[in-house]
Image 1 (cartoon, rainbow, N blue to C red):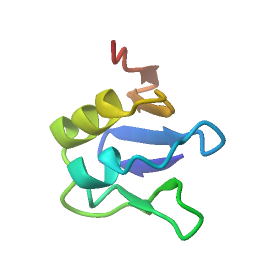
Image 2: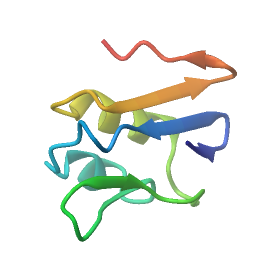
Image 3: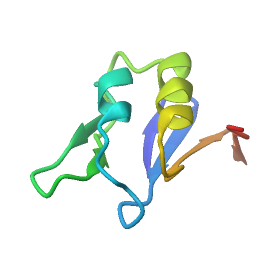
Length: 76
């Protein structure tokens, strides 16, 4: 899990289909690696809560988790 201010971002790469939606919506937080799956980038400036929420909600396999202040955010 990587930490952004107030939010921890998790990604289950075994479930990732590599659609790239997360990287398009929150490019400071995600990228598609050479194997074709998403990965969470180290803490980077510019990823705000709304970007992270949109990216997680857009994931077709729901493999992104967000934890804020110790509580998992209900995305759906």
